Image 1 (spheres, helix red, strand yellow):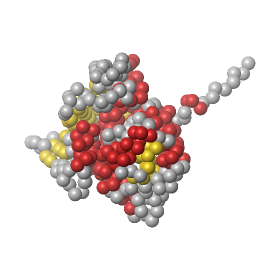
Image 2 (cartoon, rainbow, N blue to C red):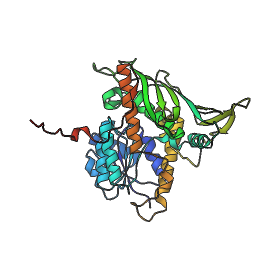
Image 3 (cartoon, rainbow, N blue to C red):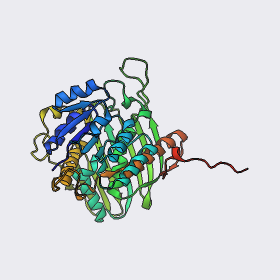
Image 4 (cartoon, rainbow, N blue to C red):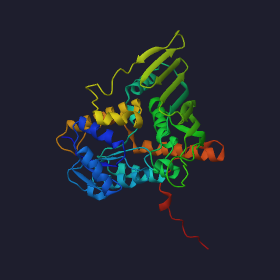
Length: 387
């Protein structure tokens, strides 16, 4: 039995996610929006039976056992913590929160309720090319890891009106929304975490065609280096100034050769080889594949909202989620194996720590050490001084 789903958010991505969930036989029972009008409009469009602007009205529904949080980032932590507290499984969009303190609350809630699913939408982990990259690296195809180089070129991430995507403090920006995926996939494929970082974060486009006088503060260019465990060095460049285009290349070099994911394909070359060989070729078509069905309405949003690798990863992730539930007799129980590769809230805290360090490095113009907080600084009380 598959659990009923409650969705938080009314953005265009919901028009892709809901058909994706239904294609895997999940029932979307309720939707939440910042305003009731927005929620009801999308509910009518997607044939969702219940719409509201009150968080609790979704969480307390008996037919909702799984919540998908795809709303502005400043709401992620409070909804996720509350959902876990009343026994709901949680899938949360990136970024997990606006700061480590928020994500730590999610980590603590997930640890307190280990019988519940609590994962993040870092969907590249489910893309077959990266699954294969992780395998060949672990099998020693390229020997000892030495270098990682990532290049991402894309168009603007801003919406067509002023909202959280325009504001760095609200979770907007290329580093937070694309860089989080890259930081995660580097650690996933290599098994190594960053120790310290040096970064440059810039906002070149500060005005847009929005009504009003507000300026854009979310970054549209980012370049950073990471010194990682085991001597691995990583360089990442993210560029948001190529409208209508998307390209992504993740390269890992080692003592015996290299592997590289370009788009959704994996290539490799030993130092002794003359040219690269194909290790995995992505021939699956999003629209026509019977394995990953997408209807015509959802297809309109795919290219503009999610590049193909991220879209395919999302569909694979939803498929794995179905496998976690389908063999059980009730909506609450599940098996861990199908979703073991998913990013946990602990992974989300690490990613947030790296992002925070990169921003600090950009301001201070120096290397910054990655530090994970163990407790909420807001709850720490200073001891009274003894005279």
